[in-house]
Image: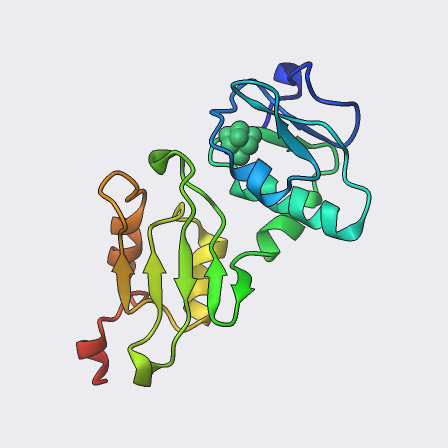
Length: 174
Ligand code: SF4
């Protein structure tokens, strides 16, 4: 949770802000470029969201930020951001959100496939958090975890060990 007392002076006044704990991972700027900018070594809010779309992406950035460095004056904003993940990018590919500091904010994805096609694949690992785990369970769980490189593994072991969440294709009888 961002600390208002550590609010960076580079933020414009208003609802959203970044505090001094930002690690400059770029997630917020990619997710909500209309709101967040790189002011040099860290991010800050240069434009408070005005449209519904800008607001949603800012709320999602609050949740995706790996260090909890983004604050919102209205606490209910966090729920909208949580509810938005996994976020559909195209067809059956979803951005998981909940980026992990353990992998310096690397993005992770869920590819949703039927059991006949081998089941769902988690690409790299997000933070292991209850709301996201429930959503992935609702999508049918995970059949495979694909780690694209060795230093972005975050909480993959916790996903793998979660009882009933991960079921290899062979164990499913596919
Ligand atoms: S997502 Fe968080 S840590 Fe990453 S650049 Fe934005 S404020 Fe900083």
